Length: 162
Image 1: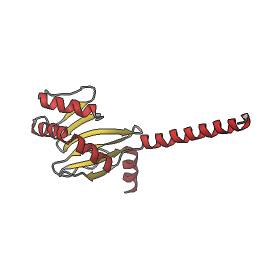
Image 2: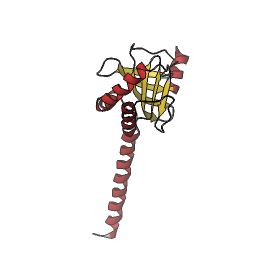
Image 3: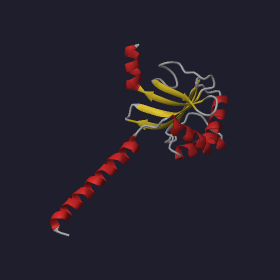
Image 4: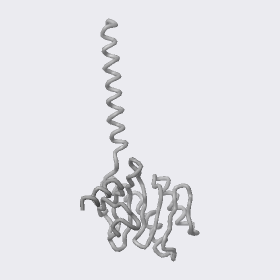
């Protein structure tokens, strides 16, 4: 093979690698959808239900725990273990208020949060409360459980157009 053709082969190989990386990053950085959230929910349902059961019975109206261990109330050992497993699975925070319990799982482009929320009444206050910039809420396989998107720019655009 002549050196002339070798340069073309190397160039084509580099182009293929660049395209492969670009396509991979596109799919890696793409925000999740309700189907992906449903699979994550199914895989973590037992731990999420342990956390919700505890949080819904506690007298504290508001509760937050982050992946770095921040919390404001003492927890039972089973709840601590469930929370630790959820954080090991990629959840970033868990928050409770009078509306329900939110499990933040994905953050996309800084201003966009995606996760799973438990709503015993099946509804949220618009623009306030547990998910202040709610733009998407889709039911999952279990009653009271939803996939949500919290996206400030989209929420603000909708508010201006309404």
